[in-house]
Image 1 (spheres, rainbow, N blue to C red):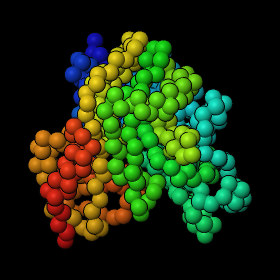
Image 2 (image 1 turned 45 degrees about the vertical axis):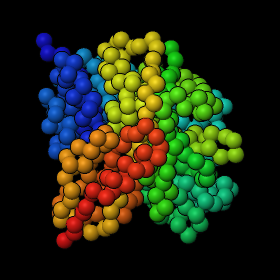
Image 3 (image 1 turned 120 degrees about the horizontal axis):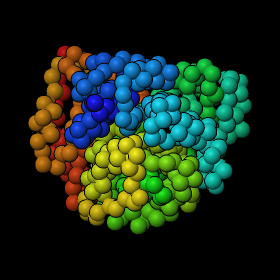
Image 4 (image 1 turned 120 degrees about the vertical axis):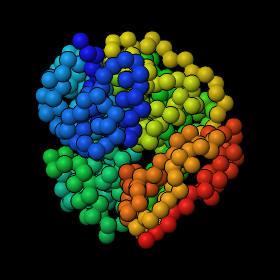
Length: 397
């Protein structure tokens, strides 16, 4: 009998997980809405479905003898995977637990109960409520859907003049039945924490500080990771993050959390029961900690949840940088493979092809390209990035 693992969602960031599952001797069933996505071409079996339609995805899964079901780096697929696992009596994090990590209103309420600081927030169902709550909280405010991914529908609103457009965008991405969140905007430095929840404890494995585009402060332009031994400087953040995830009672899995630091307080922005996108879990965590969390995740969904996670001191710095280019219709660009050959480049990819029209960046998915760099120092990262930028050329029609 074939051993089949179902991977829900099939974009570029799922590809490393699919390949790792196959390397372990399993066949992969991929469920995704886009048959042209990379997961469809890599998987042994492909079924086309909207990953948000958990009942349809379950019906598809029932047609196969599955050993497990999983996702990574896709927030919207987390509840569907948990739902399928429950219905098929497979190892999973539990459907109700999945909602704590994907519905930001539930996330905020549960974090409050644990004593984790959150921005001041209010859930609203109408524009009139949004107007009142924005006034109560005080501008600038952040308007966001309760459940979406890749910063879609998330807007920083600096005055009432722009509130209606932001509310409509959040409502579009949140679904008409879900409320919209109005939140206090925290000015401070943004941090991310990557980790893995073992059988008993959560282990934080990498910490980065974020920079954002001046044109859109809701979208990150750089994530810079320090060596794992430097995490001692971030003891308060790491301990808070471990307490948060253990308090959410996540049974196992890769985690990604984002915080803002202001006036001595780390405010929770969001926490996810999956790896950060753009190959953070598949590439950055192993690079920084020596821990292959994809392997640990696959073991866990097969019922072998690790008791502990042991990280190595690699001494490396890394940076995930998102490149942006002038708008226009693309004619040619430097080959990806040529950039990837540079000794300090871990990964490089365009999010466009010749003939596409580049537009201003509005959310995470609209960023033009990414490069993942490594170095023995932070200054080295800066020099490496300049070398990449000097090498990459785009021509326009």
